[in-house]
Amino acid sequence: MSYTRRQFVEAAFEECGMAAYTFDLTPQMLESACRRLDAMMATWNARGIRVGFPLPLSPENTNLDQETGVPDSANQAIITNLAVTIAPSFGKQASLHTMASAKNSYDALLALFAVPPEYQFPRTLPAGAGNKPWRYSDPFMPAPVDPTQTGPDGSLELY
Image (tube, rainbow, N blue to C red; front, top):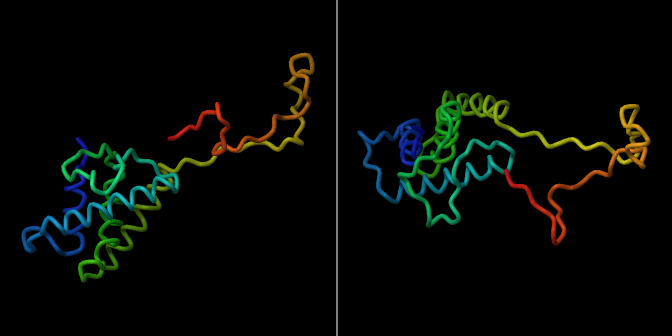
């Protein structure tokens, strides 16, 4: 079973020094931190770090008790980076240990989950000896395709 959004948020508050057994976390604090979690995960998704976190369509559609489906290898990075993100909003400063742990776990996550862009050969590159002329009429590699531009009947792949 994976963490829920609530578990990520409560663990981040613990990392900030605002544990639930000492501080009473109000529903507004939980919702605010949950919105920050969703925004952080959307940013990571845009950077190519796709860990399977379900992003809501709008901030109002966020369910704190929804399971995220995030693998265990990403939990530490999410918790510590969320703690660094939300600490100033609640009058706290993240400790040096938390900031170092956030950076190290983010770097490890980046190496593990980042999806590099697909390399495309230039149009001027010869196809090579393996591409026999009787199979292909063009002796050069096909033109590069921008994956974000599609025509009226083109497909757009989302990962």
